[in-house]
Image 1 (cartoon, rainbow, N blue to C red):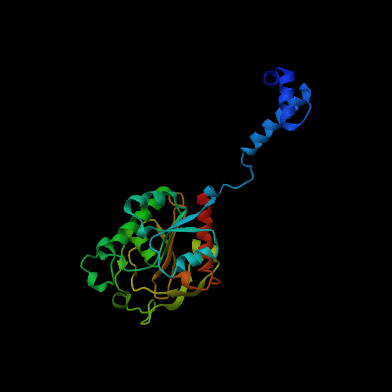
Image 2 (tube, rainbow, N blue to C red):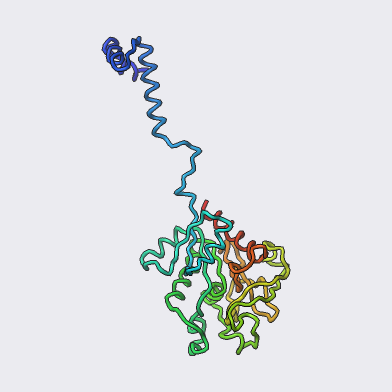
Amino acid sequence: MGFFRQICWGQNVVNLRIGRIFGLSLNTQQVRYFLFTVILFFVACGQKPSDQPDDSTNKQTIAISRVYSNSSYQNWLSKYNPELEYVNIYDLPDDQIDLVLKTASGYLLTGGCDVNPALHGHAGEEERCGKLDPRRDSLEILMIGRSFEFRKPLLGVCRGLQIMNVQGGGDLIIDLPSDRNTTIHRGSDGEVSHEVIVDSTKYLFEISDCLATMVVSHHHQAIGQLAEGYEVLAYSPDSIIEAFHFADTTVHPFALGVQYHPERMSQRNPLAGNVAREFLEHVSAASE
């Protein structure tokens, strides 16, 4: 009350000034109540309601190694979270990449051109590869390393699975038709469908509840020697690795790679929709 005694000293002066402004005749007690109410009003107006969400902390951003004009990967994930934001790492200036990777909620390595064979012990095999992209190789290797360092959820699709294996010290089969005499993974006109068999004792079965299904593929390279720390989750009928993950979740909470293309498949397929949901659950957890 000492504060209000100071404010309300000179009762007649205070009463007179308030009366002139508001057309009121107030005694000292009423003046104190009036001033207290005014102060509370301005304090309350300056505060943000505690139940109002802070949008700046709830945004989830996916760092994509390379974005394509058809936006197929974004469209796929946005079916399960339409509020997601995306950043195309390939087009960023080099001095911005680390900051984006540090603040992103998760990483997606998309399909695309062949990995440089020199990166996995097959220098001189370039003539058996398709188009190569050294910038993309280096960016994706950086993204994988940062995903371990920052413990960010990581999903690799097709080439994405392959570069994960290369970054971890494994290698790739350069050309499936000539090296393994199998042609079920890519047709003459592009993508094909083939069966995938899921290991019932492993993580992919846990999230999909699926033992076997048809998937969409479009690749001529595949995992050869498996990188240390990764565990195979599924195979194709010709024994090509179709999915793996980093097994020790204390080292990396979610690092999953699939050789097929879930973004091109029906989302009723458990190896498509359930993979997206699982990835985004980890993205959401990493954003909290």
